[in-house]
Image (cartoon, rainbow, N blue to C red; front, side, top):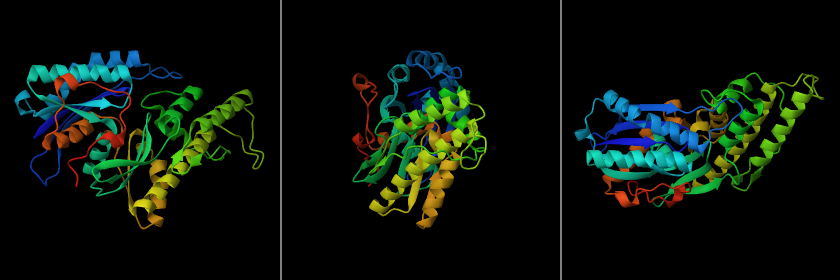
Length: 349
């Protein structure tokens, strides 16, 4: 079976085509194309502008994906699209495009939960069997484990997501949004040396990032007002790189802590990191150190599959389609709120 997947829950429009040759054999990624809407430095992306971007690029990316995959309309079995969660206007643009393809091509629709898409693609690419999943992105922060045909949420952000924290600090620093604000913070953090004191907000299995963002914003303002600011303990000059370094070290330590607690609770020795922030090499390194101490291992993917993409929607959608799941046209809506644990995972035992 072959599915086309359409993703556009935030500022990335992705189209992917995947094939499931036969039961027990690995999926084949036939094409996976993407285009990103980048706001100017110091600004975030607005829903209306992002939706306009998605509408402008939709047909072009579908044609490109079909051409790269070498498939025809008759080869496609279903059209999968992101039902939610995400930003309302961009989601609506992609849902309308999905309905258009469904009607024009005479194909069934499959609405997909964005997070489940990340998890299923991560499992397929890495081969992780039954890991604790750390889902970290611009809109979501969740620690997840599978049980009884649901992806159960063990812990999550109580306010803003970890990726949103990074993105908003990038705006404070007025650094480029290309290729991604979090990536640019990561590069700056590599040359940071001074670890500044920031709030450490772990509350049971949950995390809070809003207070940390407020604190690092104040430190950034202090540095801007006093460029000669030095660390009182070491006498070293404090730089923008030190701010990025301190932010990363603090928030990633929090994520490692709650992930380790979930591993202990469910008795797992595997961690799968998914979502756009999962590309961060420092997060992967810190998680790897923790997992090795427990005799476990960490699974992660590169930017092709970590960052929002269409192929993950095709993968999760095709798995659901193979179990008989369909989204009738009159129910092919989208929603900004769609929790991971609302999805019945019929394709897993």
